[in-house]
Structures are given as C-alpha cells and as structure tokens.
Image 1 (cartoon, protein in one colour):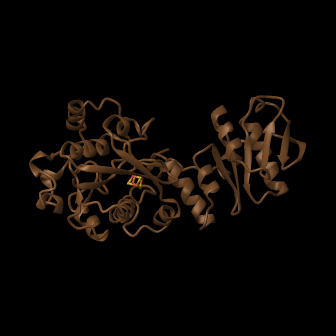
Image 2 (cartoon, rainbow, N blue to C red):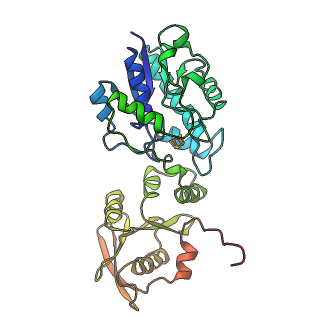
Image 3 (cartoon, rainbow, N blue to C red):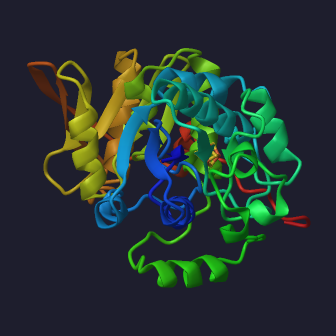
Length: 342
Ligand code: SF4
C-alpha cells in the first residue's frame, strides 16, 4: 500500500487532501506542526476546536511536532522575506516540508501531500512558488497537492502509478465553494472557518513582535507568549508593561507570570492585572501603577492605592491615572496613518 505524509492543520483543505488520498487507498499519516504564533499549518485555516475530529471519523493518524526555535529563526531571518507583516510564509512552508521529509524517510513513506490550493494565498501558493519550494526542500516531484494537482506538473507518485491523476482535482483561487462541495461528498461536516493565517499576519501583533526583537534578539518563550495578551507599553529597552484588557486576559497574565514577577492591581475598584516584564525599577513601577489605575474603574479619581506584589513581598503605593500623552508615548501599537488634510 502506498504511504504518504500529510501536512495537516485540521482545516478544510488539508483534511480534504487526506480524504482524497485515503479514497485512493493511500496510507496517510498526518503531521501537525505547532509554533508560538498560532496553529495554522498547511492550509492556513483557523484552528479547529477539535483538530482530531476528522482523524477519528475517517481513521488516519495525526502526529504533533513543535517547530519551536527553528520557527523563531525563520521569523527573525527569513530567506525569502516576510509577507505583508511578520509572516515568513515561504520559509515556513519550506521548514514544514523539510521536517516532513525527515518523517517521510523515517517511516519509509513514498511522498508528501499538502492541502495547498493554487492561487489561494498571495505569498506561498502561487504556481511558480510550488516548484521553487519543493526544490529548495530537496523534494522535487515528491510533493503532491491533490486539490490543485490537475494544474500542476505530474509528480513522482503519479508517474509511478501510486496515485491516479484522473481522480485528483483542479481547484484554483480563493473561492471555497468547490472544497465545501467536496467536503459534503465525503461526509466531512465539521471544519473550522477559513482564516487569514497565523498571528504573524496580524499588523498589531507583528508590530509588537518587531518591537520585542528590536530590544531583545533572543526572546524567551515567555516573552513571546506575552505578546498575544493585553495592552503593551515599552518603558525602556529592557522593560515592558502588559495590562489585561478583560477578565480572561487577567487570568492569562496570571497563568503566564512567574512567582518573582512584579504584578500590580488596584484593590478598591475593578481593574486590570498589570505585569512588569524585564528590569523592574522604581520608575517602571510608578508608570505601571498609573497605567493600571488608568484602565481601572478608578480612572476618574485623583489618586488611587495600587498594590504591588513581587515574590512574597507586597506593598501599596498611591498612583494618579496616566493621561493620554503618557499612553501615546509608551504604548506599543501600530499608529494609524493620519489622513491628508487632518
Ligand atoms: S500564515 Fe504563513 S507564516 Fe503563518 S503559519 Fe501560515 S504559512 Fe506559516
């Protein structure tokens, strides 16, 4: 029985690619790659609530692999550049294919499949991009894209008769209608709505990441995990302040914080959890306290007691709410372009 390794995100396209292969009697093992910036993998649909639902229903194996620092390295120094934001999509595809190649060798699989659809995404799903990426991964002819195969050169598994090209598809472009129709044919009813990509495709997230990398070339996993939570303020090159925007973010801050982190909270009113990341100085605490008051229900008061906790020490200081000038000055946020004439 022919064996294939699939790049699998749990999204519609990568699931369909697997189902098309299973229908042809190919034994498929799905590989789901994780990174710190989201879980969109081979077809960049958003995360499935239960990424294994289809694997259970249709009977294929899923293996998880965290790309960790390898992924961070390509974000920092992408050979093929970033997309519109910090997303290094071509390098990302390349990295995943290289990892899949190792797994293919290890399991004596015959080829790799992906759920990519020609023309669906601007950066990495262009016709000339596929052969370039396959060649760079040293996988020429070994990557089959079942959903667009009819518009792509014949691959090795097709040549060898492991796969029947006639039963592959010729989907192109951004419309999902053909995939939705095919899903219905297969009885695939649960799949996530398509999304634009991982967190690196978001302008504000990318802006924060750029700021982090400018000040710290080797950020910790904790630094990166904090990028997705709260409002962020840069106090100095080695100190940032993050402030929860709602109850959920307060909980996340609490869960990401380490015992020795400096945490601030307005005690008399409802308000955000505030954390100082990096070098904690008295001036940084004073700023964090005034920001903490500004985003609390005590923001209209003159002066408010704020509890500062660091390790097993805790004390209270009085802080005035930060004004807009302070917020503007310290906030790490992509500024909107000012319209001409304003
Ligand atoms: S959006 Fe681009 S960088 Fe992000 S996971 Fe998808 S291919 Fe990779």
